[in-house]
Amino acid sequence: MNTLILKKIMTNRISQREIALEVGVSLGKINKEVSILKKNGYINEKNSITKKGKDLLESNHPRRAIILAAGYGMRMVPINTEEPKGLLEVNGEPLIERIIKQLYNVGIKEIYIVVGFMKEHYEYLIDKFDVKFIINSHYETYKNMYSLFLARDYLINSYIIPCDIWFKENPFSNVEGESYYLFSKEQVINSKWKVQPRGGVKKSSKELGDRMVGLAFINRRDGKLIKDLLNKVNQSPNLFHNFWEKILEQNKKFILKGKLISSDNFKEINSYEELRDLDFNSSHLQSDSIKIIENILKTDLNGISNIKVLKKGMTNRSFFFEHNDDKYIMRIPGKGTDELINRHDEFETYEAIKDLGWTENILYLNPNNGYKLSKFIKNAKNCNPNDLQQVAKCMDLLRKFHSSNIKVNHCFNLYKQINFYEDLRNGQSAYRDYKTIKKRVFKLRPFIERNVKKKALCHIDANPDNFIFSKNHLYLIDWEYAGMQDPDIDIAMFAIYAMYDQQKIDKLIQFYYHNQCDSLTKQKIYAYIAACGLLWSNWCEYKQSLGLDFGAYSIAQYRYAKEYSKKVLNYLGE
Image 1 (cartoon, rainbow, N blue to C red):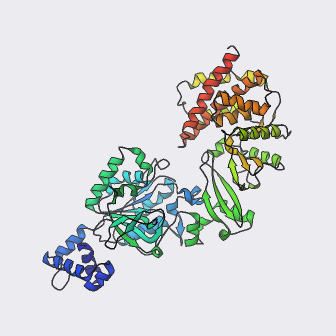
Image 2 (cartoon, helix red, strand yellow):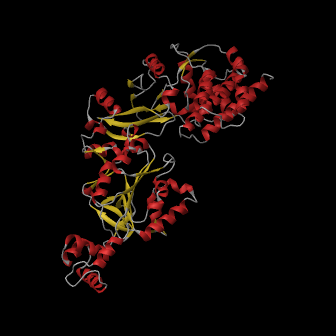
Image 3 (cartoon, rainbow, N blue to C red):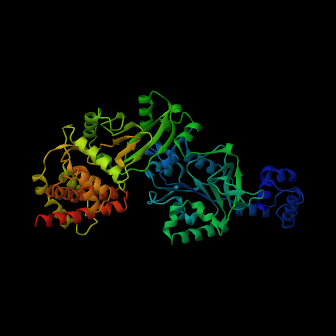
């Protein structure tokens, strides 16, 4: 309180009554504090600040700032596929540049930016503003608690600032008193905190709390405390999956004072629509995907609503949106996709199957870059691989498709693709016995090729998630990998995606063959399971080299290669 009153006296030269109204406490409280300041020599009898008072203010002068800019900003689709959210422009000015300029205006020039996703895009700030970078290499795995941990040595007398916020007026000052966390007066569901009249922060007794803005000032005492808390988090790294504000709750109490800002004075930009509402003319609203949507649907920015990122796919990044009363999905090819998929082959496949009544409705597909716009299937649910009735229907659809006599000019060469993915990963496999298992899988090739009865257009990526039930209709979607092959490969693919054991695999085979599958064909499907397991194991290792991890799925695929190659070779007496 003392430094706050001193600041008001020095900067505004306002009366004690005016200070009381502005601070939100009684006049009597201000008069008492002023008396203490006079007694201690911080102000004189004329209520002017003394040299001692100025020294006190100087000791509470913010020295530096930490800007958190490492994350994906997944809710910013489709913009985050082209630019990190800290560089989104509002009124022609990148968000992070506005923050830096506001810091400069109060004399703060020691600025640390924690970067990760698209970090190269921020590089120019080093020359333009003399900022310093802290690199977060785990931005895909952890939330911003880890970013703050990396910057823990710079917490004392520092502002902590999210990169995706726009302040109408400068929120920073050359003098601060106590540490604080900034809240908005807007009441929201996802906050449990309420700022009290004198700055204390308590848990709200209602379902709504004051909106947490993300900005904080940390003085010397609290800087040491928060650094210690972050070091404790480092001993249990799973806690890095939380936002940094999590450590502000200790023993069920909020350890910093709260400061309120009007919701009219700032905008947190977490989504495409929030940016659009703040600055309709922002250059970042016109991404390639949005231009496609506008052209195909004959609409403009106002006609696109409810944009949501879909579950992060293994190959692509996609987002959902609404236009009028219809729903759509826009696919944007993911990291490394160009190496994995021939988009011209995909285009040929979709042209060949476009008259079938059980594929997704494609409105736009670019064979050069893989952008795809399709209509959302309403009332949709993915096949549940543990629901045998659903699985039986999926196998009947596959059988029907394989009998449709649809042909394309490209094939899916299984063993060639195994080598291709192996080359892409550019290094030794993480599996110690990889060479032995690969040799075993390749030993199955002559057996497979001798027993191929026919070639047909196969889906290749026939996993349960790509079978969609909608009311009384069943769809098979996402034909990126499709090509001419032995239909039995699709049975094998379904089995390994579902991570079936042998009993379930045998049941699946009989669903497809209506209980008429002979022993030789079953062994051939086992051989496909081994080969396809090795294929997707190599695929996973390549993706992991790009920073993507698929958990249990990747090990399961390698186990299929190892176990089922052994089963078939034993059957063949080799």
